[in-house]
Length: 248
Ligand code: ADP
Picture (tube, rainbow, N blue to C red):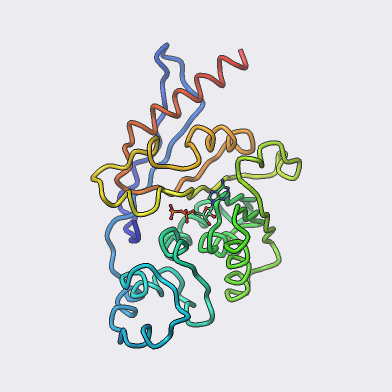
């Protein structure tokens, strides 16, 4: 999902458990639709011999290269990427929208920061951002890309497995939002008409939500538009029911 159209905002959804108890969960879904703007067009018109002449550029498909300004408008100012980053980076226009949604006083945790597309926008529009990644190379790329965008001094970089963050005291009562764009399962999601979050997402969606809810009650998920919504509702109901019965 690399494009944007903000017309389809579905609003709030309240989940009711089987016993007809209202689960403490409100969902707001924003769908980003096909949108071809000038940044996408700018990359497309490029002469592809530029890339073949420069072996140091790594990208999995030519299509990603053509979309580089769509991911990072400052791409030419020294943005770094690796093959995996190209798959997972959020287009800038969408990252900006998400960051504005959190708001300028928000403290946000990005649990799977990758090359930093979202971190950069959270740094610009929010109060503080914790950028977590399990991979040192990616975290270094993220730091570098934040420098390219001259991010404010409000980014904390953390090299860790997000799932180990649950009891980390630096997050106690800190974050207003957790932003999550966990591994979707590489490109496999593109081969199917529907995206099963249960089968394709790693780490397990159950673990991700359980850990997130222990850190903040507001989760922002960036997910493929082919997501099976019913499956997400089912997972949320299961987790919330368990949480409620656990706490009496
Ligand atoms: P995609 O499947 O969408 O291409 P990636 O495999 O590139 O996603 O993962 C996105 C980012 O999440 C990567 O930078 C990766 O290092 C990071 N990541 C993966 N697992 C974890 C984890 N358990 N905790 C924190 N970061 C993780």
